[in-house]
Image 1 (tube, rainbow, N blue to C red):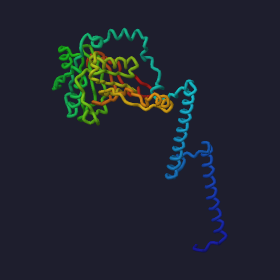
Image 2 (cartoon, rainbow, N blue to C red):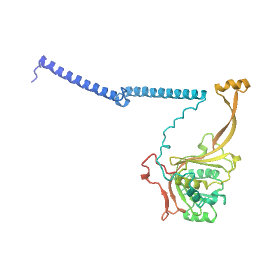
Image 3 (cartoon, helix red, strand yellow):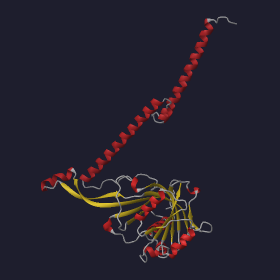
Image 4 (cartoon, rainbow, N blue to C red):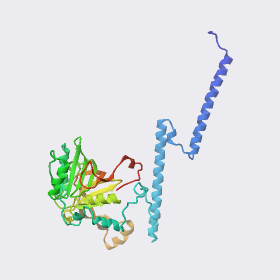
Length: 363
């Protein structure tokens, strides 16, 4: 106890500790060499524990990818320019791989030669409005517990949809409102639902026989919140519906189409757009104008035109000004007939089990 150790024993212990450290360092070096060699002698940032070194390697790899992408673009432009100079056809442009063009195959996608689809259009609930046998007349109301932002949204809807009328909900049941609208020859009923002082749903009911579509409303931006917005006129707008490709999407598109008159006034230069992308329906309201703008020509054509005295060329350009509002819709359910929450028959209902794939769309 308490005696001094011999120098020989101390030296042996130091040698054993040093050898252990050397062995552990050698093992780490071998592991790093294996990792770097498995990836083609390229060190991955995720394998580096030091944050500064990891960020430096990541920035270097990002810069290398950027330079390679720029080099490929330059070679592609050079090949295309050379083909045009030789009078040959340029190589076809590469189509990027997106979720839309890799969507799952759907049997219900509409085809231009589908006779059954056209026969159904002649006998559905929107036939009289879309064939201009009657003018659309819209009734807009709210839920029982209204908010401060709901009336502002409804007042802007009244400027978007021609021949639309607003009635206070009060304490009336929705079925009684449907009966009242049917007796007053309204063709559609829109109910704006609010939650926590924010509009969060739209219920569109076709009259007199339905159908009833329930939409989730999100990302609402009113006209006053849009920068450099314009004020809409009273002209009947043009309607643009894009990417409603399936049977269900075709039916939803005809329901939206029945809200607007089928004789737009082109002098007003108003356009209302419902754009479907990945089952989200984006609504936009614009005014447009055509202007002539001088465009500079390319260097190859400059030599020919300078001899003639024409150094520039005029081109017609369209400019847009958003009028608002701006919002996004997502279909929750489509029901046969008018609104009936207890005994109604549903054509389509969105369920959580349907969202198992990012490449499956229903509209």
